Length: 215
Length: 215
Image (cartoon, rainbow over all chains, first blue to last red; front, side, top):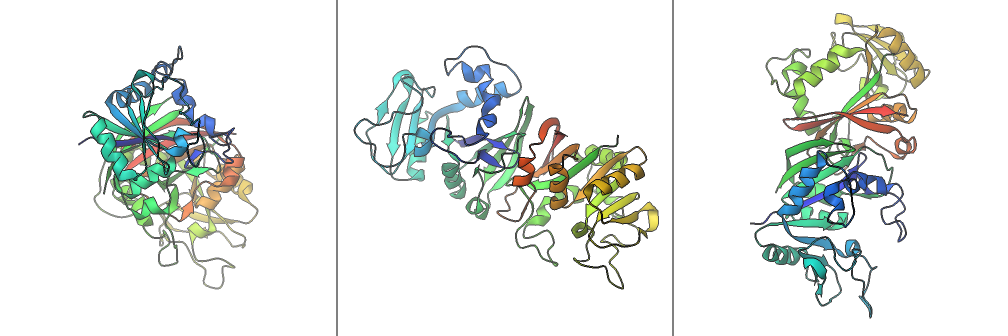
């Protein structure tokens, strides 16, 4: 069965976004530094329509994950556009007309909405009946490939607590943010997932720790 | 100049001891699991007078650190015996007559006490005039070797916030404790140390992340 994989950049003190997040500063104070390593990669820049970039030890991990992924699940906050009903002229995501996913994306929301077909193969389907339903739909749509959990942290916590996550990759960035959004909380710890290290990769500005998640 | 090095075992959710620490359970609930990897090492067992044990990827790190260390600094809590004045029949540490350090150890305390000479080369010196004084005395006593910071987390935070730490090694254990004592706090983040990865070692049950600390 298609595996559910989640990867996220995290500071050494455990934050996936900095303090004082706002609409203007969605990553919080200092949070941009969590993503510098990936924005520098040619493997990230090319699908995002940007030139240049580095090839380093992070590149194969990034490329393999991209190639292995057939569908993505994300939370409403990550899709963006603010909370509440979608309204007259609804938000269509942060990614422009041609989002970089190029596969089916399932957005967890409390507010129904028709599917949204974008250029380049990305379709956003809005799922209102919970995380298990979203996973089932994403697995069906993934064509035998894996399902990536896009985030945010709250959605990852739900999947982890529900015992539905198969693989967790922490991209550990050696900064201290001092506050903000944590990935792990008491609920996830109470679910007592078993974590087994399957890969460790040291790369410029980041260390990748990949774990198989049991239940 | 002798470097100040600190290493500590830490859960994936950032705790160096579990919740509900007590005199009977000084590592907190679940906290013992943080140290299983080291207790299994022949390199740890031998100086602690125990037989057997494993040789694995953690062993050279442990042995190198031991060989490189000429003095240790630790907090009063780590030395043990409870808070307050030392009293009539004072506590002499957790380690019996012949502690495994075999070099000078400086204990940070608010309560004066004469130095305590143990068998096998360990001397406990009680330092009441602060972290900088302890570091100066430890450097003088280390005979050109490094100074190890023994812990606990609060003492490490003080040295990190003061910009006095040179090397930080996190021994990341893939468990979630859900609560307890954190290594990093807002003060350490506010001190904005620069951390540069110098070594990553994957070993059974633990991943070692070593950082050079700048200021």
